[in-house]
Length: 359
View 1 (cartoon, rainbow, N blue to C red):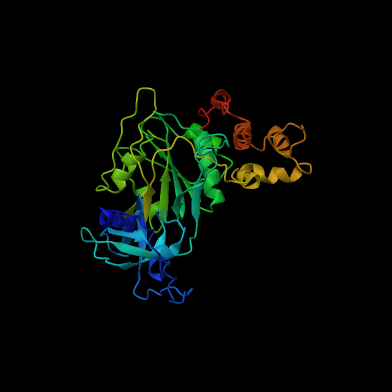
View 2: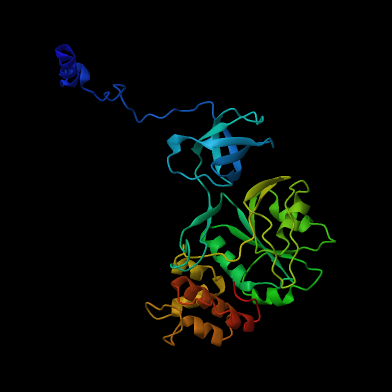
């Protein structure tokens, strides 16, 4: 019994610790850190043609094989978008399951940006989104009928294009259903190039404008943009949605994608309801209306061009017949919308101006 009790006492006795029981965190690596980055001398140039959840589809110059790539960690937070010129390393064979790495992004010649909305209190209201990089031309696709042309949307696209220093081109579809005279009269004060597209006519005039350029196609749903893309690139396999009875089409394209043409590229973008301009400064917004810019030099100092003071040079220009009053009304709608003072976007007034619901 005594021995048994001594055993219990020995088991319950607190054990003494020694240096072997002390846990020491491993020290940092002794390898010296360096800011030198790999040169990637074996990198090859490519064009980003699609982006999908952290994977980038690229093509090499003169080669249509799609190469899947990921962004190298050394790029940090630099975003990669459709139209970017990049250098890639790794497996560039394009075989199934292969993966390359984007290690460099070339300096962009242009960046087309839009915001989801103009209002600060809207969901993601003023968060900028890059639509495409390195575009030379914006093709604004608008239908002449079914649905009717929307000059408010066209005006927004023109502002965004000129702010990004991208040449605009007005592409009018469904010209077999209506004539362009009324719409072209609205833009009579601008040197705005345009092409007419009919379903029963060749697209040679448009192809001529696209040759040698990277062009981004923008347009709201239902204007026939996807049909146009399928005619330009027969194997594009872009879905074409039917226009609903109320004149609003379904969103048939879900992501931007670059498609090769003979001698050029087109970037097909999703159908969008509006082209937010919150990222555009007030001065750049005015320069998106070249027919009004010169008259602004006759405004009094610090004129906000809203017309509230009654002395704006833009009002004098319209009164003298030097500009279309609908153009001034459109500019002021965008100005108010950008300031968040026009939650209804004045749809009824835009309709009376002889155009569309405005946006």
